[in-house]
Length: 293
Image (cartoon, rainbow, N blue to C red; front, side, top):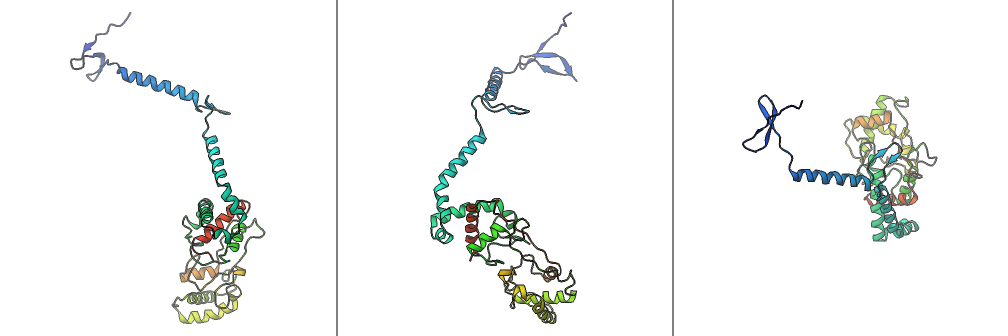
């Protein structure tokens, strides 16, 4: 038997009031506006059309391709191919010329360093920083302090083969002995030579007597790599100790810690990871940062 429902009419809106109420609050039986229904229908039809026309629904082995065959991946591939084709004449010229000739051509140099900057951001900024200013343990590439040298050929060798790389037989190698850890020097000798090393860059020693004693320790143990004056020996990867530039820190305790048990950073060998043209662009960019020789 059908349920009889009595609908009262709301005096304000003129719409029927649903016979059920909650806590004395009734609900209007107001149908949605026609424009809203039409808008909803249009949106629904548009969505169905979009599903049919474009890639939309995933399934186990792939996804619906859409009748239009649209692919953002294909579009990107086409754009990359077009960009490579547009850059090909400049890249060919860049590959054919030596560094000096490239540096003498402002247009080609701008092209090379722009590409080098992008490559640096992708591959080198993680260690050297986005602006190449380095960090503790990671060299600053903006200054003129180069352990191995900062000319074009030297930079290319360093980038190609890395430093202390375990996967490249031609990688640059340098190893500072652990003078304290391996009992080559006593704690007092380590502190003394640390005090002397700081004087090489113009820092006044906190203990002049210790620095004087350290001079003899330096002569006996350090000149083989750092030279008689402490200016370093590039062929051995011995850093310059006279310029006031420190890879880790110029704090007396940090200097002594490095002598006691030195830290050795590793730079990857980029040959094989990057093609020769990319390495050439990186060399030009790093050299052009301001510290190149």
